[in-house]
Length: 234
Image (cartoon, rainbow, N blue to C red; front, top):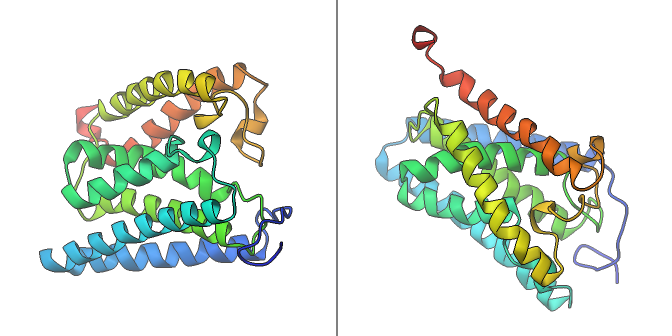
């Protein structure tokens, strides 16, 4: 069965016209939303946070409903244990509470993790399909929310924050790994590389890509900290 909501698997055109146009549209929406948040009063910002959080939630629910209706939902693939799925839930909570510790996760894990998913989405049904737009929409919203945390909410990363987030990420991986072994799943891609093109394709097979991605992760976190580094403090 093909079509926008079909289940026929189609090769994905990475950085094709649809992919690039969708990335461009997300960038425009993000810039407009951040600018609106910067000039709005607290009531306006609350409405914008609510709209962004509801968008993420509705996109996630829509994907689960589609997969269940199509007979594709499985415990091995669809529990929200992948980093971006977990961060979507964390982001919804962070937009609601604005808790500083959650804003920290939104910025580092949301931006670093979801940007990669926007650039190399896991879209086994092609670019003109519901799951493609849901994936880029939800991941793009998580990135926008991470930028919102620093631009609008005023979160300022400290020198310790990248290392705290790095430690939490590894702790999360340590929890998910035995779950993968129990379920026969591949959450966080701790058992095997993703099927689609990702940065992991540049690394050797398991378990080496897991070890080699560690310096990449902390490097990304430190890079995200750089705009907020105080030169006078060293």
